[in-house]
Image (cartoon, rainbow, N blue to C red; front, side):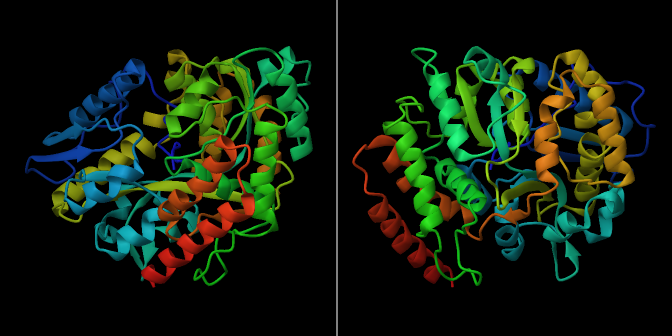
Length: 449
């Protein structure tokens, strides 16, 4: 989804206020001598002026080094909005270069809404260093339709400062759900406005987090053949029962329903929320976009995890793009998102800007030479204690990843209802909520064929 995406949403760790004028060597326009204009998604919002300026500076540097190419940015944030994505796609309003979450790859590719970029992949200089399993996700029938941009696994994000304030050891974060409950109660007991554990209840984010939680308990959203719902299960009931009890028995979740992606991120950035499920890029967004204190946050492994939701996103090219526009778009992606020491991976600039450099938030290059170079540069320029994230790194290496379900966004919307139900009604019937959602999900799956 946001991640930002996940979202989740695009994570921009290496942003900076000024562009490196020396950049890459000047070259002809990516499309040759003919002038070409492309539109690109994911410009940071005006509410994040430093990040927006860094992006604009990178655009200027790119255009300087690619004479004849004009780049126009759109600033929709988050980059992927499930409410607008479908209508925007159907209306032919997508940018030349747009972002797609992994949940929508098959649909976008299957409907011919992404360009076959197989002839142009060499424009991404480190293409062969991208993880093969991640590249496979944007490949169909031997043809490539996207450039993988983010790959992540879910953990438990927590506020180390609040742990200390509540008498908890920030170096020993919860490893079980019982420990999460106990820690949440102590944080909530700090006073009015403090929330021990934050959770979503709508805007597709509720269903998304339900999926994270049920995967962690060893359950599934769908049957193996993807034809029936599988979440009306002991694992699904355990997810909702735990949330219900934390909300109404422990009183550790506050009394405000958090619906959209921004709501929980904003609450986390306020410094009064102790824990939430999320990938490491949550820390980046909380600090960059929601004014969190960079030194306060850490992330550990998913409690009692039998599996962890694995998600991500890719950039795709509008199928209406000409060959010249496609080459220019991929050249932009190569410069901004796939070059060590530049764009999002310019950690030295990010550190100067005050960004939370050091968060292990993107494994799209794995342990390839490019991946190792990125990680070494990230550690070298870290602006926060990398040890705060070691529990997550250790856990991620041992917890099996599990992909998001097919038709994820539609299923997440259905699962918002039971999530909202247990968080808004003390007398909510968990069995009935799951049964109703199961019926709706099975109808959806039958209609999808």
